[in-house]
Structure formats: structure tokens, C-alpha cells
Image (cartoon, rainbow, N blue to C red):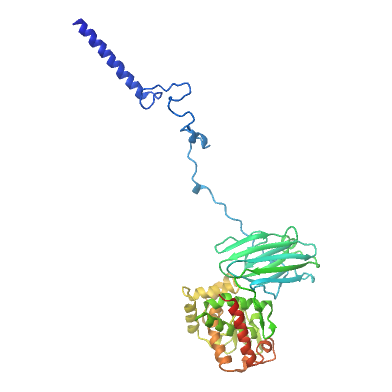
Length: 441
């Protein structure tokens, strides 16, 4: 019995030791997952783990955040792009609004100077056609001064000589500010045509807030290159070169008006040619800004009136690029044409677009949109596709099917050049049609 008792005690003691060992193996971090191999190897491994394997705690040790989670990207502030300075060259300076309008496809070069000493800024009305882009280059050709280009859409400066406006549909690139050397340059790409003013001046003038003047020996070449997808076109009608201004507006008619008219392409080009000839011989295409053109036939002579003025009842009143007579059309017919030609737009939308295209801004645009009666009708007709649609019918009736007195002849320019008689006028219409046909999409 004593022998049996000793045996039982020995077995019980062994069992307790085994239980204690197992329990220590579960709690001891020095044992591997199986709990049967001590982790006290000289190299610090368990004898099976690759000693070159990455430390599972390395990510926390190396993130530089002392164990804190890094901020997500969304929490990092985004830096706003720089915006062009809203300079006022023609408000603060002595500004010459030139008659040259470099708006044709291809390259137009203009050589000018500041010899008179009367102006420190030259302003060129121009069109940046939507599509491939427009490159504007100003080169100093004489005098000691640093050329600067400032481009504005109405009152909004979209390029201040160094920085271009960042917005959807407009990309400003390839800039050379002109502070060194003899050349300033900027390229624009836009998804729609923009009516802009290109200001030519010098950095000396800009930095003086347009109070200083350039030396009177200052000369320059301004080059505007519109990369339209069409070959160069010779703007000659009845043997007369129409000049850069009128040629630019014929380009504008082809690219911006023809696509919005009704009918087949041939019908649209023909209608635009009839009205284009009319605007040419009436002198509208030579106006400083045909899109805001408003000419009232007062009893003491014709003269331009302001954008928010109304010509008195009973007088001839021509408006817009089409040179259309406001009294000849009812408001209801004009609004119906606008809504038909420009689907998705309200009459207010058409008015706002016409006012902005004509160079109006701020309160004047709001006044056009809120206008009523004859003024409202006149601005709907200043939307070029609307005006062209109505005037094509009128000119066809009065000058092609009939031969009314105001269609041909006269001693005043430019009617005596582009419409001296009926046969010449018909030839001129065909030559305008050929120009538009070569340019229109």
C-alpha cells in the first residue's frame, strides 16, 4: 500500500508539472505558435523565421507620426491657382481704340508705333475663335521699352501680361511676359469664340498704373494667328480688298453664324452671303463693333445711339451685324425665331448672350435682359443668327427679287464700291458667298 501511495504521488506531481508547463507556454511570448520551442535564439529569431523579413512594427516606426494615423489627402488644403490682375489700361491710361481688328483665320500682322506721344496703350478689338487656338505675339521693332500684352473680355482681364485666367473652356499657355528681350507672347485655346480687346503697351506703363508714356520712337509688330482648320482666304469683292476689319467679320459670319442658320449647308451659306453683302455695302462690317451696332436715322441725319437707347418711332433703325431694320419685324416673330434657332435657350438667355458678345458687362447686361418692347426686340435682332434670318428675307425681297432704290447706287462709301448697280451687286453677293463657302464648317 505504501508503494502504491508513493506511485500515486509521483504521478500526481508529474501531472501538476505538465499542467504548469502548458499554462506557461500559453502566456509566454517567448514561445512560438506551437508552444514548444523557446524563442531565445542568439539572433533573436525563433529559428525558423527569415532574419531578413520586415519587422511587423516597422510601418509604425517609420511613418514619422509617432504612432498617430496620417491625415487623409482630402484634409490637405488645395492651393487656388493665381488669378490675373484686373488691370484697367483704357480707364487709367491714354488709350487709342484702333480700327484694325485682327480676327481672320491664319496670321494677321500689324505694324504700328507710338510716335505721336498721345497714347500709352493701343487697343485692338479681336475675336479668339473657338477650336485649335490663337497665338498673340508682340515684338518690339524700335525704341528702348519692354513689350506687354493685356487681354480682356469686356471688363474681365483674362491675361494680365503674366498670368492667364483659369476657367472651364479657356486655356492660357505658351506665355512670354516680355520683361526681358524684345518679344511678349501668349496663346489662348477656348471652346467658344471670345470677343476680346488686345492691349498693346510697355511694362514701364503697366508698372506706373498707366500714367507713364513710352518713348516716341517706340515701334512694334502685333501678330495674331488664329489656327482655324481652313486655308487662307482672299477677302476681295468686286476687285476691292475689304480690309482686315471687314475680312475678320466675314470670317466671323462663316464660323459663328452660318452653323446656326436653318436649311442645308448651301442654303445657310447663301443666306449668310446675302446679308453679309448687305452689311458690307451698308458699312456695318467697318463699324468699330458691329455686334453692338445701333444706327438711328434721325431727321437731322443718321448717327449711332447707345446700347440702351431706343430710336424714336417712325425712323429707320439698323442694328447688329446683320444691319437689320428693327421696325420691319414684330416682337412675336423675332422671339419665335430666336427660340427656334437656339433650342434650349430662353429669350432671356439669348438676350444675355447677345449683350455679352457685344461687349456689355454688369448692369448693362442686366438691363438688356430686363428690357421690354422695342429695345428688347432690337437686342434679340442683335443676336446674329436671329438678325441674319430676318434680314435674309428682307434683302432677298427688296434687292434681289425687286430693285428698290436703297439697294444699289449712291455716292457714299462703301455702297458705291460694293453695290454701284444691280448687276455688280449680284456679282458681289456671289463673291461673298465664295468667301463664306471656303470658311464655313
